[in-house]
Amino acid sequence: MLIDRYIARAQLNAFVIVFVSLAGLTFVVDAFTNMEEFLAHSASGGGLWKVLGTYYGYRLISFFDATSPVISLASAMFALSWLERHNELTALLAAGITRWRIARSAVVFAALVAGVAAVNREAVLPRIRGAFSRNAQDLRGDKAQPFEARYDHATDILFRGRSVQVGLQRIEGPSLLLPQALGDLGSQIDAEEARWLPADDDHPAGYLLSGVREPEGIDLLPAVDIDGRRLVETRSGAPWLEPGQCFVASDVTFEQLIGSANWSQYSSTPELAAAIANPSLGVGPEIALRVHARVVAPFLDMTLAMLGIPLVLGPNRRGIFVAVGLCVAMTVLFFLVSLGSHAAAAAAVVSPSTGAFLPLLVLAPLAAWRAQPMWQ
Image (tube, rainbow, N blue to C red):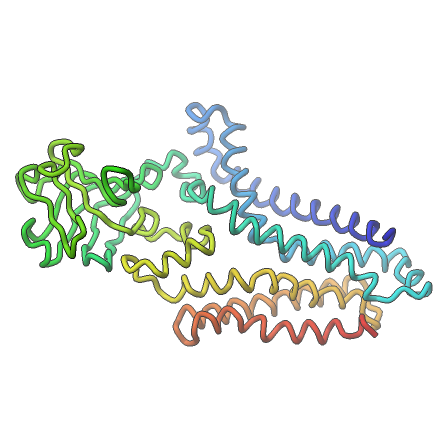
């Protein structure tokens, strides 16, 4: 137990130092690059330090998600190399302590980090993903951004618009191209703006269009139902609507409509599974790939650790710099295999499940082979 506490403490210190150093370097460079935007927003945002703390506080959580496997491996390499440098590893081996017994605490630490990262992906990031939709140039979320037309595949309505404001969940100049089933309203609905509204007692989820210009006299037109579902609501049947407004029901959320990568990258696995089952989205293979990759991720994190630890604890004694160099090469190989498999799945060369599990099928046997000398 004393050995475990000693190595775990060294590894925890190394993890904190490396994480803070990398995050600090990244955020300091980014902050100085965008300092004008932060200063301009500081007056309405409660001061410069509050703006910086809020902006980079959220991104610190995302940074942990992106870098935890590599930093976990780096901290293990540092803690075990520290034993080697001070000849403590030689003393432990001479005392009859096996290499696996020495590596056990580093492996347990890597497993804990992988578990925390998994909880972070499933429980924390989905709650704060809205903060990642605004960059330093759009801290208020009211900057107009281009909007790419997108279908609601369940209703065949094509959502078009002049621009979007992400923070306000607002589409400027929406122009909805309607299918023939909605011919009573004409070929399209043009309005001044559209806003996403979640479902409540008055209406399902969808978009509230204000300042409707076409079709003319929208307030007097009847609501439109398709297959028993109220698709377009007008003021004639919904008193809660203001003059010149109509409501279009849609199961495509605002994040999904504007094609934001945040909703898929930072959604939980159940949310991704629900998106795949949502007929309105018509999602591609990349979403199914992400679901399978979430399942594989903790095992891949452990595989990366098991690829690097034997470089220090193996029977072949290497210098610290040689071990670090081999570890970097092993990490590059790890990410090349992972990214290559994911790219093949996204391009429909292989199935999403194959693309997600292929890195584990390739790298896990390699990690077991590399770790074998530690059990001897």
